[in-house]
Length: 214
Image (tube, rainbow, N blue to C red; front, side, top):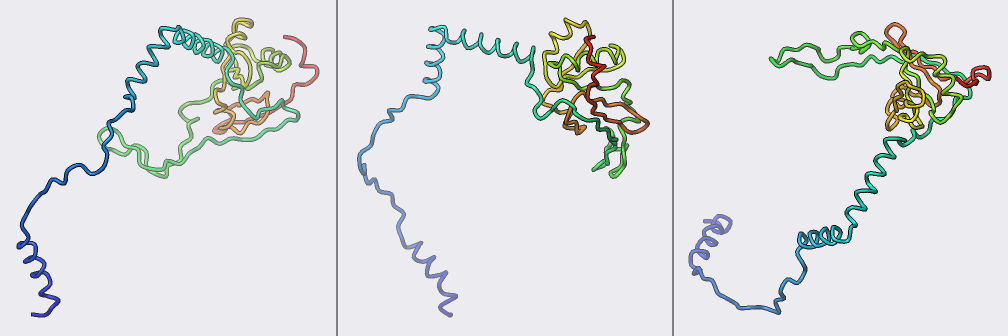
């Protein structure tokens, strides 16, 4: 038997010959008790203190105040300026389906690679009008040019609830600027209108003769 093949048997024999034993070696070094307070107990104590001192009520009132303020005047959309020159372009909302879309029975209803235009099923029935709600000239232009039933007025800055009460018509707000980013709008007032299977987006400055109060 060669040394290479004998090695496993030698190791096995040594393991079998060694008696199984366990020994208590006692305490090795100093053992300290845990002195850190329990985290949950700390949190509970802190909350109890805040409740007793009235801090909880103050925090709730401050949160309520900030929430109401944010609803009344949402965060302005960053990077949007007043239109200084007219700019217009076509926007094709068509998308390509990345994977098969199946119904609940597994039947493919839209195959991967299919071109889908949302306007074929959900047309844009009224223009979208983006404007600065703090600019009286833009407000005068928009409310005079578009009747309340002929457009959706969408603010990128301003107080929509205050304007609704003052002008007796609905105003929307582009929270987070998701719509202007989607359409590529950089200046207001801007309009989005459907033309066939595409959208026409136009940024246009308010002309001097259109600046009269509405």
